[in-house]
Image 1: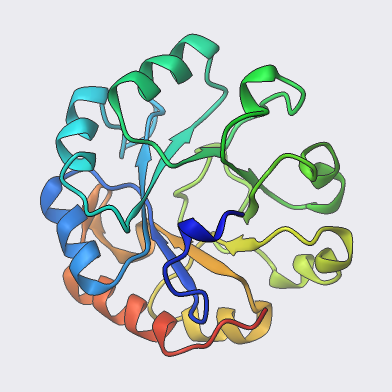
Image 2 (image 1 turned 90 degrees about the vertical axis):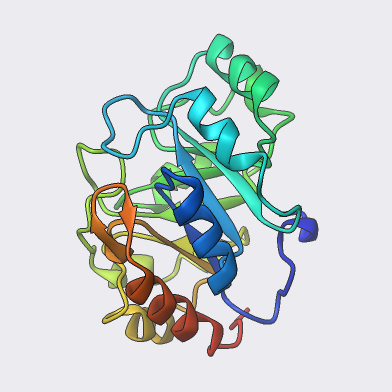
Length: 217
């Protein structure tokens, strides 16, 4: 992954996903987030229209990585989002085709659920990072953790950065960092008051615990 996406590679990279308002976005930025995720999947409780996302994304400082979270997007949807929004990374949560031309020239995070290894193979050459998440019909944001033992041995299978997701929260993040040693973490429901609304106290505690840990790899 391009180092331009990571302002401080000595610390755990933190992405706050499911941003729905400028207030929550600026709060996450102030508290030390590295990236913000915007969900363009209509069935998600954190779904944003292009117009709503633009009002938020265009006010973010350049250092913040802006991530478009999509599920099986069409070429037309991709181009429409890019036309209106300053997207840095695409986070794919569906059953996208790794051979599709649209992914060959874009910065991609591919979200996977267990079992990880066989699902990585088609994407290893084109992704910038893998996001390891729980299996869910919601395509992410379920708040349910998976067995971290599923990750054992994955670094022998791919040298791409791993971003840990799935049920992370202020209570379990330190244990997760010690056991998994990820490049980065992705959190949504674990730092919310309710779906789509971030909680300042939870955000602060989560980010502070992440930034106390040095990057393991």
